[in-house]
Length: 143
Length: 143
DNA sequence: CGCTTTATCTTGACCGATTCAAAATAAATA
DNA sequence: TATTTATTTTGAATCGGTCAAGATAAAGCG
Image (tube, rainbow over all chains, first blue to last red; front, top):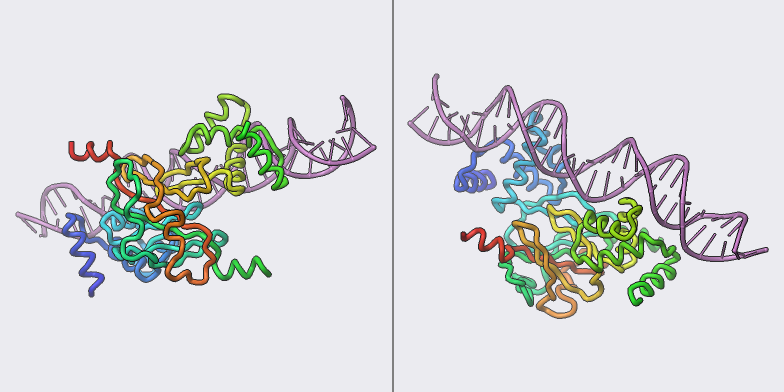
């Protein structure tokens, strides 16, 4: 299986063990884009009821570090994860209900990647979050 | 005093009372850009030792809502505040130590404000966070 | 200016996402 | 299959931040 082979290779190259929790967490996030940690824990336990929440937290952190997952955490909301990585896309977040959707940046492949004055920082990523109201909350307000 | 008059006017226009905690919090954030809540509490208490942490939390939230303050909260870091608002600037955050600096966007006044596909959201703000390493952490790594 | 109303503050308990730590388990290697 | 040690399990702890009830003080009025 592609997903399987992918994670195995990445883990081994990083000298990390290929464990059930790690594989299950990657699968769960792939199946549930933008899910929060609790949702992922539940999804993982559908298949493997004995996996602890701690193992899920650890796996999420490791997979994020290795670049297999990406963490999204808008102000005032808990962490969410997605398996769509490396394509430089961004997110719209609803101020009212926290709904989240993917957006490709209007500018192109590397939007805003260069700051006008980087203060000596070596920048490797530009993260963009668009804030607004989702369609549901808009109509709820006018109603 | 400009700051004073400014906050009074904004609060009254919003039908909010002008209270000591609110004025003190705005002054503290102005004096300590990018400070976290605890730092602001300490600063406020230098002048007004009896102000509670709750009042500071409430004031920060209110002033942020009214647009007098802006909250910055990069992943894995606690909330910080700044009084520089309305000029559409962004931030660089150090992945290693959490250091934070202001950046004006390279693109111009309204960087990336228009998403390619907004999924029906009405977008009012595009927030950009540049991730990287600050000068200190860069030299620490090579050393 | 003192009185009334009620928004705001103080106090102190509480919450929930995440982390820590120690003992138990299982992946990798020989 | 046995050994090593990275990972996981378990369960407590941490810590920003929030909630709630009673006390206080801004704002408006006589």
